[in-house]
Structures are given as C-alpha cells and as structure tokens.
Length: 308
Image 1 (cartoon, rainbow, N blue to C red):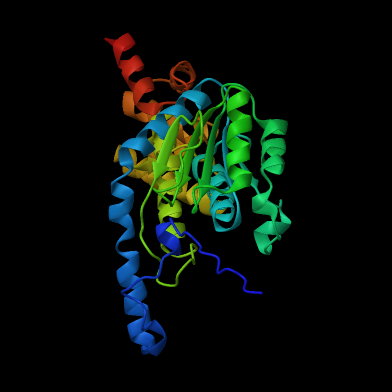
Image 2 (image 1 turned 120 degrees about the vertical axis):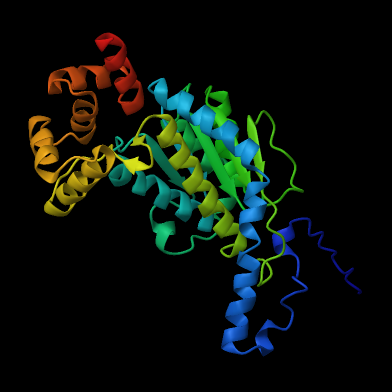
C-alpha cells in the first residue's frame, strides 16, 4: 500500500529556509557570527515598519493604566519568556506597582526554565488563565512568532469577551487576523538563519517591540522627566547615589543642595525635582505631583500657572 506524501504548506517566513545561510555549517566561527549578525541587522527595519500599529497599542495600554486597570502579556516559549522578563524589569526601573504588568506564560513558571510539551497548543488553558485575572478595561498584548499559537489566541478571545482591549505581536504577516482584535502588529523579519529557530530574529524583534512598548507607555504616564528615570525610590546605597546623580543632572545644582532636597522629600526624587526646579516648598511640589498623576512636566506647569 502506498501512503500518499503529505504536503506541508509553510506560510510563515520564519519557517522558510534562508538562502543566505544554506552554507552556514561549512563556515568558520567568525563567518558564522558575521552571518548571524548580518541577519540580526535586518530586524530594526522590520520593526520600523510596524511603528504605527505599535503606537496604537501604546495608547491603549496608557489609557488602561490611567483608568486604574492593568496590562497583561500572553505568550508561549520564547515569546512568553521575553514578556515575563519585560514585566519583571518595569518594577525596579520605573517604580510601578507589581500588578500593573502581568505576564501569562503557557505552561506556567516551570515552562520559563524548560519546555512544557503541548502547553502552547491549549487554547482553553489560555482562555482560563486570562479569564481568572483580566477585567473589563484592561489591555492584553499577545505575542507569537507563528501568529497562530492556540494558547495566545484563546487568551485574546477570552480577554475580548471580558471587555479588555487586545493586540497581537505576530512574526507571521501571512497568518489570519484573529477575530475582534483591536491592533495587529505583524512584523516580518524573514527566514531565520536557522530555519524555524524563532528565538533568533523573531525573538529579537519581540524584545525590541516589548522594550519600546513598555518604555513608551511609561513615558506617556510621566514616569520619566526628559530622558531620566525619575520614578525610582532609593532603597539601598547604590540607588541613593543614582538618585542624587539624576537629580543633579536634571537641575544642574550642587550635590549638597540636591541631597538636602531629597532629605526634605523623604527620598522622593520627583518631589525633590519639582521643588528645586520651581523653587516651591516640598509640600507644594508633592501636591502638584499628586494632582497631575505623578507627571513631572505637568506638575511644573501647574506650579508655574499658580505662581503667575
């Protein structure tokens, strides 16, 4: 009996063979690294092409957080690990509450360290995971290199039913757009240096997108002043030194003046910054920040208006 040969239809660029790397196993070490690097240099241009869609996602996330809601990341494998990393780093970097950004990874914590078979194929598990924690008004960002990971798509559909905003970062511009999705961010990084190894260019693109997404959201929420991290609170000697350096950089004032302002503000960098830049009492600076949701520039403007 003859078994008919199955034809596999590959429609994701990441699964195709890369004609530029077919001889990579015959190269020297330096040539291998140069070839991989040449492929990696294609990633920023691919990300640049989806910046308008990424901006829409940032605005939805900003609106959710301003409204007292949360941002959720959903992914599997490399996508989920990168999302978990980004969510974890926002707490110390921008002093945000730990529940502002929540990561949902197929297979749970164990899958962060090792592969969990079939976890990404369980759409019901994704829907259940999101269903337990997502509320109306939240924003959910899914990430998948293939554009069709069941765990992620199930989570997005469940989130939409609960009234959350949704977006999908996909490494496959040929995948079918999920129904009722608010924003599709389909980045085309082309064939991987090693066919199907989406931890390479597709993963690099996701890391760039996540970092830009969360950083832009923090900037929109006033967690920076200029390009300085001013939403940090010093909890050890190293961070106290960094806080003082940031305050001196932002104000141009002496170490002694900045140290005194920080002491009066009980270590709150933003309060000390507004106090020094507008020459008002610490209590006035603190009230201005509270009235403007912690946004330094808005607080400075409001103090100047009242002073005028």
